[in-house]
Image (cartoon, rainbow, N blue to C red; front, side):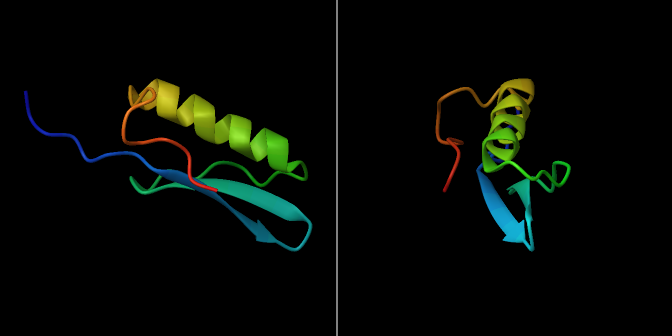
Length: 59
């Protein structure tokens, strides 16, 4: 099985919007609620199969 790059997510703010991003290049939609951007990041990690390993969300 080939090695996969770890997924590490973070959120960034621009004006009144917050966006989730990942080290793999994924980017979520701009959200007004930080909590929703964090939820987007958690869903991305689950979809990527990263689970709770080294790809935990960063704040």
